[in-house]
Length: 355
Image (cartoon, rainbow, N blue to C red; front, side, top):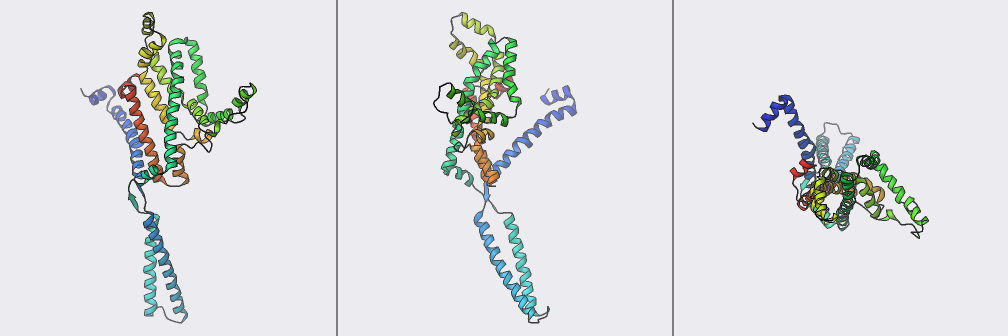
């Protein structure tokens, strides 16, 4: 029995069609089609040379049209009738020229499209944008690494060490702040990390700092804010895997003389690899694609690549250049996904089956 026949037998024809059609709709309409459109947008640009030529032609024809209008007005002032051959010829020329101008204006409203890699070449040649792109990728990797270092001990403690009641309280402590909107949480960090904020005030009053630190002048505030914003996406998949780890394996390794470092390196971490891979992928993609956190905590000296993409789309009105930048970021995120799966030696079915 094929999978389709089994689906029909278990759920009936209507439900089986619905169960197949809904994922297909989601995949094609909401994922594949927008990405294909973005790629198409990124590969063409408005031919400004042709557009400028059309505008020059319109300007010249407009001047000629005004001259014809003056000639027709002068002839009519001289008393020529509308049936006069000279006046009829000028009227015909006027109408023909007016139609040509209208056709040229329609062409300028829909500029010619030229397909080329120009939008991608622009990114490669723009040193500032290239630097911001590399900084965004590096910072996203740092956020992912910091989140992994923080979250693995937390996830292990919740899954294998903490009593059930204590684990529930700790989970609530982790989840409740995330009931608040991300922008509001980011503004809370803005108040904490500001020059006269709570953190600087605490350390200066305690005598640990002579003067406040400017957290919001560079990338420090952005890294802190993004690590906090996406830390749960690392905790939960890691916790889900560690929760399925048989405690007897840890006890047996300990009885045989293995230290805690070896237990984690040889038993716990290999068992949690799919969860760590999912957490790393999710955290990196969210960090690389975020806009609100760097916009609020970054300041003028910490531009993020997504801010440039936003600027191309909404400030500059250049959707083609913005689509090229967005596709470069998307392509790099796909490469990162493949790299994480290679590093952790997991496959898609391992991730979907165990997380």
